[in-house]
Length: 165
Image (cartoon, rainbow, N blue to C red; front, side):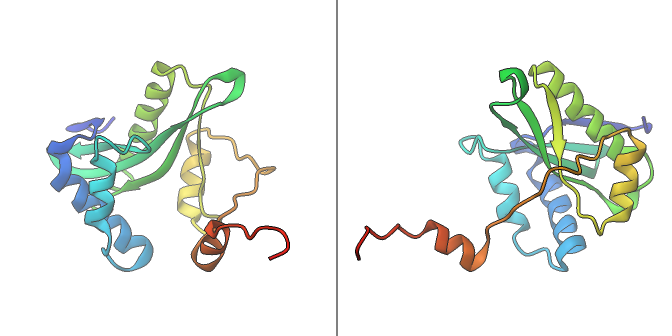
Protein backbone atom coordinates (compact mmCIF):
# COMPACT_ATOMS: atom_id res chain seq x y z
CA UNK A 1 0.00 0.00 0.00
CA UNK A 2 1.15 3.52 -0.74
CA UNK A 3 2.81 5.35 2.11
CA UNK A 4 0.63 8.07 3.58
CA UNK A 5 -2.56 6.41 2.28
CA UNK A 6 -5.58 6.30 4.59
CA UNK A 7 -8.97 4.83 3.67
CA UNK A 8 -12.14 5.04 5.73
CA UNK A 9 -15.89 5.20 5.41
CA UNK A 10 -16.78 8.76 4.49
CA UNK A 11 -18.67 10.87 7.00
CA UNK A 12 -19.93 14.42 7.33
CA UNK A 13 -16.43 15.72 8.07
CA UNK A 14 -15.33 14.49 4.64
CA UNK A 15 -17.77 16.65 2.66
CA UNK A 16 -15.19 19.03 1.13
CA UNK A 17 -12.74 16.25 0.23
CA UNK A 18 -15.44 14.00 -1.24
CA UNK A 19 -16.99 16.91 -3.14
CA UNK A 20 -13.60 17.70 -4.70
CA UNK A 21 -13.25 14.08 -5.85
CA UNK A 22 -16.86 13.86 -7.03
CA UNK A 23 -16.48 16.97 -9.18
CA UNK A 24 -13.23 15.64 -10.64
CA UNK A 25 -14.95 12.32 -11.34
CA UNK A 26 -17.91 13.94 -13.07
CA UNK A 27 -15.61 16.19 -15.12
CA UNK A 28 -13.54 13.17 -16.13
CA UNK A 29 -16.53 11.09 -17.25
CA UNK A 30 -19.05 13.68 -18.43
CA UNK A 31 -17.01 16.82 -19.06
CA UNK A 32 -18.63 18.88 -16.29
CA UNK A 33 -18.55 18.98 -12.48
CA UNK A 34 -22.29 19.76 -12.51
CA UNK A 35 -24.11 17.75 -9.86
CA UNK A 36 -21.02 17.02 -7.77
CA UNK A 37 -22.27 18.88 -4.71
CA UNK A 38 -25.70 17.21 -4.82
CA UNK A 39 -24.15 13.76 -5.31
CA UNK A 40 -21.81 14.31 -2.36
CA UNK A 41 -24.66 15.49 -0.17
CA UNK A 42 -26.71 12.39 -1.08
CA UNK A 43 -23.84 10.00 -0.34
CA UNK A 44 -23.24 11.56 3.05
CA UNK A 45 -26.91 11.93 4.03
CA UNK A 46 -27.42 9.78 7.12
CA UNK A 47 -31.06 9.14 6.24
CA UNK A 48 -30.47 7.98 2.67
CA UNK A 49 -29.31 4.48 3.58
CA UNK A 50 -29.16 3.53 -0.08
CA UNK A 51 -25.50 4.23 -0.73
CA UNK A 52 -22.34 5.05 1.15
CA UNK A 53 -18.83 6.03 0.24
CA UNK A 54 -15.31 5.25 1.32
CA UNK A 55 -12.66 7.87 0.80
CA UNK A 56 -8.93 7.56 0.21
CA UNK A 57 -6.56 10.28 1.35
CA UNK A 58 -2.87 10.48 0.54
CA UNK A 59 -0.99 12.62 3.03
CA UNK A 60 -4.35 14.06 4.08
CA UNK A 61 -5.33 15.12 0.54
CA UNK A 62 -8.30 13.65 -1.38
CA UNK A 63 -7.06 10.80 -3.58
CA UNK A 64 -10.07 8.65 -4.47
CA UNK A 65 -13.41 7.25 -3.46
CA UNK A 66 -15.71 4.31 -3.99
CA UNK A 67 -19.47 4.38 -3.57
CA UNK A 68 -21.32 1.22 -2.64
CA UNK A 69 -24.57 -0.27 -1.44
CA UNK A 70 -25.57 -3.49 0.27
CA UNK A 71 -28.01 -5.55 -1.78
CA UNK A 72 -30.19 -8.39 -0.50
CA UNK A 73 -30.84 -11.20 -1.10
CA UNK A 74 -27.64 -12.62 -2.46
CA UNK A 75 -26.21 -16.10 -2.73
CA UNK A 76 -27.13 -18.29 0.24
CA UNK A 77 -29.42 -15.52 1.52
CA UNK A 78 -26.38 -13.38 2.31
CA UNK A 79 -25.84 -9.91 0.96
CA UNK A 80 -23.84 -8.56 -1.95
CA UNK A 81 -21.76 -5.44 -1.59
CA UNK A 82 -22.25 -3.60 -4.90
CA UNK A 83 -19.60 -1.03 -5.82
CA UNK A 84 -21.29 1.67 -7.87
CA UNK A 85 -18.27 3.85 -8.60
CA UNK A 86 -14.53 3.66 -8.12
CA UNK A 87 -12.58 6.82 -8.87
CA UNK A 88 -8.96 7.75 -8.29
CA UNK A 89 -7.74 11.31 -8.79
CA UNK A 90 -5.50 11.79 -11.83
CA UNK A 91 -2.71 13.05 -9.55
CA UNK A 92 -2.34 9.65 -7.85
CA UNK A 93 -3.34 7.11 -10.51
CA UNK A 94 -1.11 4.03 -10.86
CA UNK A 95 -0.04 4.37 -7.23
CA UNK A 96 -2.16 1.52 -5.74
CA UNK A 97 -4.99 3.75 -4.50
CA UNK A 98 -7.61 1.92 -6.61
CA UNK A 99 -6.54 -1.53 -5.46
CA UNK A 100 -6.48 -0.30 -1.85
CA UNK A 101 -10.05 0.99 -2.20
CA UNK A 102 -11.24 -2.33 -3.65
CA UNK A 103 -9.39 -4.22 -0.89
CA UNK A 104 -11.10 -2.03 1.72
CA UNK A 105 -14.51 -2.84 0.22
CA UNK A 106 -13.63 -6.55 0.08
CA UNK A 107 -12.75 -6.43 3.78
CA UNK A 108 -15.98 -4.58 4.53
CA UNK A 109 -17.99 -7.14 2.54
CA UNK A 110 -16.36 -9.91 4.55
CA UNK A 111 -17.09 -8.14 7.86
CA UNK A 112 -20.74 -7.72 6.81
CA UNK A 113 -20.98 -11.43 5.86
CA UNK A 114 -21.62 -10.63 2.20
CA UNK A 115 -21.18 -13.50 -0.22
CA UNK A 116 -19.57 -11.31 -2.89
CA UNK A 117 -18.47 -7.90 -4.12
CA UNK A 118 -19.93 -6.95 -7.51
CA UNK A 119 -19.56 -3.98 -9.86
CA UNK A 120 -19.91 -3.04 -13.50
CA UNK A 121 -17.44 -1.44 -15.89
CA UNK A 122 -17.79 0.22 -19.27
CA UNK A 123 -16.53 -1.98 -22.12
CA UNK A 124 -14.93 1.14 -23.59
CA UNK A 125 -12.83 1.81 -20.47
CA UNK A 126 -9.82 -0.35 -21.30
CA UNK A 127 -7.74 0.97 -18.44
CA UNK A 128 -10.41 0.04 -15.88
CA UNK A 129 -10.92 -3.39 -17.44
CA UNK A 130 -7.19 -4.08 -17.36
CA UNK A 131 -7.05 -2.98 -13.71
CA UNK A 132 -9.95 -5.24 -12.70
CA UNK A 133 -8.42 -8.18 -14.58
CA UNK A 134 -5.06 -7.50 -12.90
CA UNK A 135 -6.52 -7.61 -9.37
CA UNK A 136 -8.09 -11.00 -10.09
CA UNK A 137 -11.76 -10.04 -10.58
CA UNK A 138 -13.78 -12.43 -12.74
CA UNK A 139 -15.69 -11.04 -15.69
CA UNK A 140 -19.29 -12.23 -15.64
CA UNK A 141 -20.02 -12.31 -19.35
CA UNK A 142 -23.43 -13.97 -19.03
CA UNK A 143 -24.93 -10.94 -17.25
CA UNK A 144 -26.44 -8.08 -19.20
CA UNK A 145 -26.68 -4.63 -17.66
CA UNK A 146 -30.01 -2.85 -18.28
CA UNK A 147 -30.99 0.76 -17.74
CA UNK A 148 -34.12 2.89 -17.81
CA UNK A 149 -33.50 6.62 -18.18
CA UNK A 150 -35.08 9.72 -19.66
CA UNK A 151 -38.32 9.09 -21.53
CA UNK A 152 -38.16 5.33 -20.96
CA UNK A 153 -37.89 5.87 -17.18
CA UNK A 154 -40.77 8.34 -17.21
CA UNK A 155 -42.91 5.95 -19.26
CA UNK A 156 -42.24 3.07 -16.86
CA UNK A 157 -43.01 5.29 -13.87
CA UNK A 158 -46.32 6.51 -15.30
CA UNK A 159 -49.43 4.99 -13.74
CA UNK A 160 -50.73 2.04 -15.68
CA UNK A 161 -54.03 2.71 -17.38
CA UNK A 162 -56.95 0.58 -16.28
CA UNK A 163 -58.02 -2.00 -18.87
CA UNK A 164 -60.48 -0.58 -21.38
CA UNK A 165 -59.42 3.06 -21.04
